[in-house]
Length: 195
Image (cartoon, rainbow, N blue to C red; front, side, top):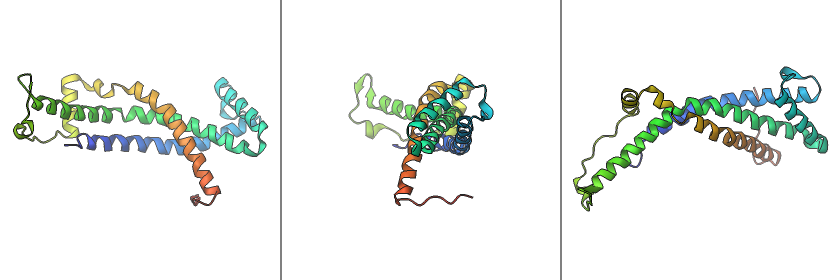
């Protein structure tokens, strides 16, 4: 069964996307507006934030060097921050489904390994002797984990997933927007109608 854990993977990716993309869409607009307000001296909602003020000063410096791309610079940094901020809760919320997917895949590997060896020797007729058993469902695996190891195990590795996802989706979504805008500018794509 080459698709062991596929259902859990669909659940994980659906949960991740359902959180990531709406948060990203709203955050990139809000952050771009906030950066523009800070650069204009308005301070926005972040008047006392040292980190945000430093970012605004850095963007102002880069924008001053290239007046014609100042909007693009602001949007790139806003999109990168928005992608990073949206990825953190998305990664954390989808961790239980990722743990379940990994367990389902590991159970398949363990079953294959057991049938390949009999009494410590390689079983050359493993395919003939292996009985096909139905794969456990996502719910069955979740129930087993909760009953045998406790519900907290479903969140194991959440910090590592967040640490990996934050820079990955910050860069990925910012670069995607840059490339999309370039494609629109060169007539390779049609801009989406705004509502």
